[in-house]
Image (cartoon, rainbow, N blue to C red; front, side):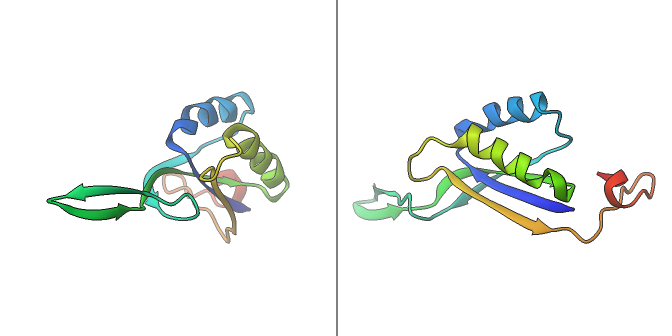
Length: 112
């Protein structure tokens, strides 16, 4: 199994939720995050001092999927969230050693 962690623009969350529902994907965990990268930032003034604000608001979406579904999910995220502009985000694919459903004790793919 793999965990797919996607950092996307906040405005792309609803389209991604719709696309994952249409594709029949299971669950998704969403967090509000802030980060900096090539997108850069902007200047603001606070009490007469110039401040560079470079932490951009983003959404982090996480999926745990079977190995054979990784490419399908990655393509779905890319096709849904790509604008072609700097700041579209990143996708990380991370190995998952074990998944356990707390309520039932199920393990592995059955717990996802």
